[in-house]
Figure 1 (tube, helix red, strand yellow):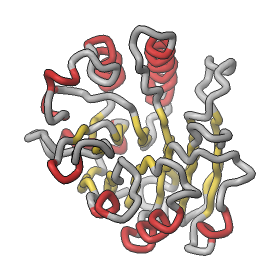
Figure 2: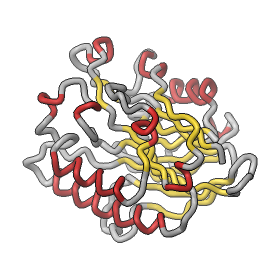
Figure 3: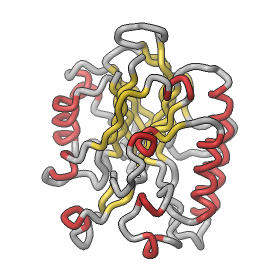
Length: 264
């Protein structure tokens, strides 16, 4: 079962690129972030024409997340539990039917758009850390279900210096500050596996390149898009790769997809 995550950086503006990627990569499940449209404006017809069931949690102009699946699914959570006052569309969770049921008939997935947190001197950084606290609490609760769970998305976290082209330049950024990395480790230490890091410990493989200063051409990137697996999902891990091809397209997102293959 191929599950991908992709920060599309405005779905309606890059719909052709996203649909081209869906046709070429053909993920069973796609977790999208930063769709930047309301739920009503989500291009449901265009995506469902490709054979996907869809659900979106949108927001005008900013944020927004969506789940696409070739098999039926049931949304079980919109927004993080315990964080109901948060009006930003950043979390959507569903139970997805497994295409060819084996040990598992369903898999639980969540699409996550974690706050950026910059500038760190503003209220945005405490908001980021608080959001991560809520995520950790919910992630811990999900482990008690003892089922395959995939928490995928744009975490806006550079986990280690191996995940950034210039560690010194990013040391004080909200994505790499010690407090941010510590919060991310706390989630991992609950029992989750960072799928890409587990299979590619060598580092310096990226999912984001800024539009400025020729970052893409020079491979000055960051690894900030992650797929975290519960132990039951990690037991099924067969592959995890970054698909760089969409980043090289005309008018691309500044992120590129990352996918995992689970033999469920």
